[in-house]
Amino acid sequence: MIAQAILPKIKPGATVKVFEKVKEGDKERVAQFSGLVLSRKHGSEQGASFMVRSTIAGVGVEKVFPINSPLIEKVEVIDAPKKVRRSKLYYVRELSRKETRQKMGTAK
Image (cartoon, rainbow, N blue to C red; front, side):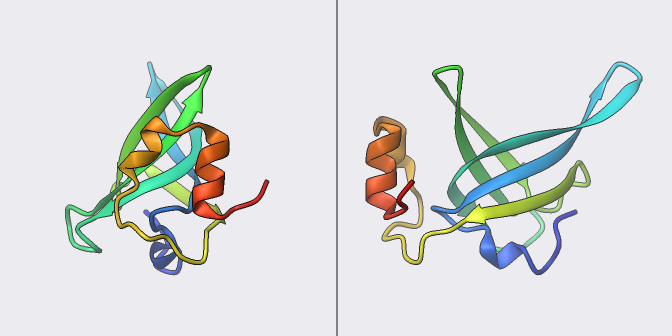
């Protein structure tokens, strides 16, 4: 479950690290997935979710995480831009990492 204090910080343009429980055979471990939040859907209601995009081994990977999922252990917000001009950042799929940082206004 995600802490109620973190929910308002998970918004498009934020860089987050999601810790989720993964079951492999009879063992359970915590896997982390970090990336850019592309969208947040359905506010805080029962079916609410957010989409995170990351590049792994040169391939873009997107995961949709339900907010009310018991498999999510915690979410850390690494950084967030002050203002993003879109509610859904799907255009980032076609941009390079450098172009994305320039558009978001985050300098690294």
